[in-house]
Length: 446
Image (cartoon, rainbow, N blue to C red):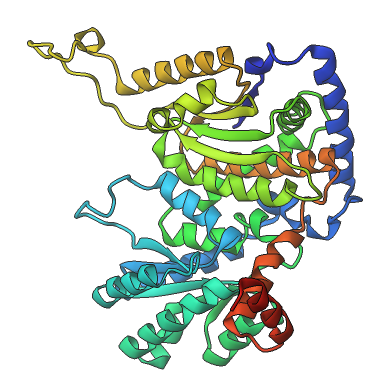
C-alpha cells in the first residue's frame, strides 16, 4: 500500500497555496473519472487491476509451463518504451541481484532486446542465444516499430535455424493488436501463440496488460499478488477526497512546478528500483512533456549517486524537487561486524543492520536537501514485493493522469516522438520519404 507524505515541502509552500492546487487536482480527477478529457479513448488501464480475467493469467502460465518443459533457460523479451520498461522494472525489482551468478537458477533468465539500435548489443545477444535454450516474446501493437522489428528479424532467424520452423512457432509468442498490423499477420501466418494489447491502453500504461503480465509470469513472479496490490490502489485512488494519495501527489508537484521547480528527480535508496525510475520517466515525460509544458523527469539511485550527483542536487540551480520512494522493510538481514583494530573507525556501528545505516543516510539526505532548497515528496511502501510494486505502478499511473490534466495537456498522446522517426526513415532511404531525405541531405551539406 502506497503512503504519501508531503511534509518535506512545508518550508516551500503555504497551506493556502496547497489547498488551491488540491482543488485543481480534484477538478482534474473529475475529468479523469468522468472520462471526458483529451485522450479519453485511452483509459482502459484504469480498471485493469479489477477486471483482468483469471483466464489471461492461466494462459500466461501455460506458456511458462510449456517452455519450462522444453528446458528453456533464456527468454528474450523484444520491445521498446512501454513495451518493455514495466516488465524490466518488475524483473529487476523482484529478482535476486545476483541471480545470473547463482548456480541454482529456478526460472529462465530474462533478457531484453529491441529497445535500442546498437549493433554490438544485438550481436552479443545473439552470441548468448547460441549457447542457451531460448524462447522469445515479441511485443508490438503494429509490428513495424523500427527498433523491435530490426531486432526481431535476426532473433527469429536464429530460433528457426536452431529448432526448425515448427518448433520455433512454439518458442515465439507475440503480444500485439487483436486484428491488424504486421506482427498480427506474421503471428497468424507462423502459428505463434498470441496475446492481445487492448486498443484503449497506451504503451506507457500497459504494464498490467499482457505486455507486462506475460514476462512477469515467465520470470516466475506472482502476478496475482501484483494485481491485488494494484486493485487496492485502484480502490483508494478512486475516492474523490483531498487525502487521496494520487490527488495529493499531483497537486503538490504541480504547485512546486508553478514556483519554478522544473525538474523532478525520482529517488530510491534501493538499487533494485533503478528501473522503476526508468519506467516512471517515460510515464511522466511522455504524458506531460508537450505544448511547451511539463516537469522534466529524472532519476537517481542513492546512496550511489550521492557521490556523483549529490553536489549539484545540494548546491546547483534551485529548479529541483525530489520524490523519494522508500521501502520500509528489507527482506534480508546483514549486520555490521565488530573489528578489533577499528582502523575504519566504524565500531560504533557494530550490531546495527546495514539497512538501518541506509535509512539514516536517507533521512540525513532528505534533511540536507531540504536545507539546500530541494523540496521532498515522500512515497512509501512497506516492502519490495509483487503486491507493493503493483501498488506503485497504479499509484503513479493515476497520479500521472491527474497531473497532466492539471497542466492542461493530453496525458495519452505523444505527437512529439514522430519527429525523429520521420528524419530517421528519410535518412535510411525508406520509400515515401524521398523529398524529406533530399531536404535533410541539403541541410546537412551532403
